Length: 101
Image (cartoon, rainbow, N blue to C red):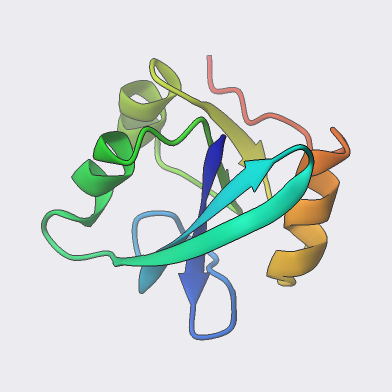
């Protein structure tokens, strides 16, 4: 399974759309097996789909992107700025899904 975390420098970005890059985290057997960085340029968001990401962790996402990405993957609220903590919470099933009606 792969997840994408919207990032700025060394913390989770306040906005999915305005993040500097996406940290792609590969998880197998509840352990991190690898990471990859995809910069949020013109093709960055498309690359998330190409990477076959199963979930996104972010603090906020606009309605347009929610509709586009939620058809292909689940989207979760980040708790705070710490990426390691949020990945651990995701693995433990303790992050809340973002839902926009």
